[in-house]
Length: 255
Image (cartoon, rainbow, N blue to C red; front, side, top):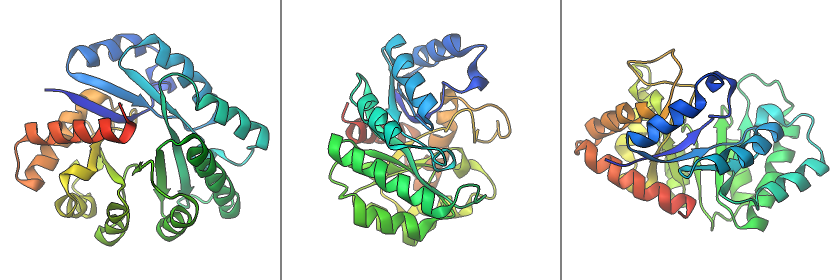
C-alpha cells in the first residue's frame, strides 16, 4: 500500500520536537512521497534545505495570501531562483483568502498574479489556496494561467459547480481531513461528483486532522482515514483510491 502526501507543512514549529523521527516513521509505513508546501518566503527558503535531508521529501515554494502584505519584487526574484532548486516541484501555495480579510484584496490579487507568472515562466504546476474567494480566484486563473502545466486546488472548499469549472480545465482537487467531518457535506458531494482520476490526497499537516483525530496535530499517517472516506463515498475499495490518487499525484508533480 503506497501513499502520496501532496500537501504538508513539516517545516512548521509543531514538528520541532520530533520531525526527523516522524518523517522516517511515515516513510517506513508506506508514505512513499511527501511534498512539503511553501507558504512564506521564510518557509520556502527552509524547504529547499529540508528536502535535501530525505530522499522521499519534495517541496514547493510560494507565499500564502495571508503572508503577501510585505512582499517585494526582490522577493519575487528570490522565489524564482528558489523554484529552480533540486526537488522543488511547483509554485504554491498561492491564491486568495478573504475569510479574515487581514490583507487587502487588491494586494492579494497583485501577488497571486505575480506568482502565477513565475509558475508560467518556470513551467511549473501550481498549488492554489482559495478560501471565501471563489469567483476572484477562478477569474484570475482563467486570465493569468493557461493551466498547461497543471495544478491542484488545495483543500477544496467550494461546491460541485465550482469543482466542475476546475475539473473541466484539467486541475486536480486536493482532498483532506475535512471530508471526514460531519459538517463536511459539501466536500462529500464534490467527492461523489468528481472523477477519482482528478483527486489527490493531502493532510495540510499539522492542520485539519481527520476524524477520529480532529483537533489534534495532523500527520501523513492519517491519510488512510481520508482514503477510507473517499472509498465509502465512491463505493470502491480503499486500495483503488490509494492507487489512483498515487498515480494522480505523480502525474501532477511530474515524478
